[in-house]
Amino acid sequence: MTVLIHVTNTSNNTTFDVEVVHNAVLATLKAHDAEACEISVLLTDDADIKHLNRDYRGIDAPTDVLAFAMRDGEDSNVNPNLLGDLVISLETASRQVATGDQFSATHSSLETEKQEITHDSLETEVALLAVHGVLHLLGYDHQTEEEATVMFEKQKTIFGLLQEP
Image (tube, rainbow, N blue to C red; front, top):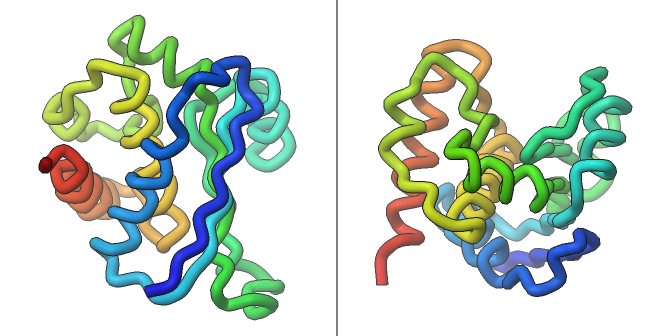
């Protein structure tokens, strides 16, 4: 499996270890037996992600993670190896850890899934957001309870692999 992972940090948190994101993305792709692919990840702040969330989802508020799949839509065959882009707000992730309101992307009624993972640091939160985002790029979703059950179980399994020594 040849994987290219580009991580760019434009946030004010310049000390964040981007290797956390790289490892989470790679673990997710390996668990999914993904073929050769390329993913770009942008670590940013609330102002930038709010702008993207408004422009692409019609929601004028910051969020924790956005996933832009390149294998969807009319241009999906331009480069079959290009999986897509993730945007993660380090500012939102930091706030979620500080307030105990972790990972708002799991906003389904499956609260037990949310509670089974300990969100004790920014690194943990961002790793989970990266796993979640890559699963979206791979076609998973959580719009229905059935979809959410499948996606969050996969997410929990992959996150468990990241915690192993």
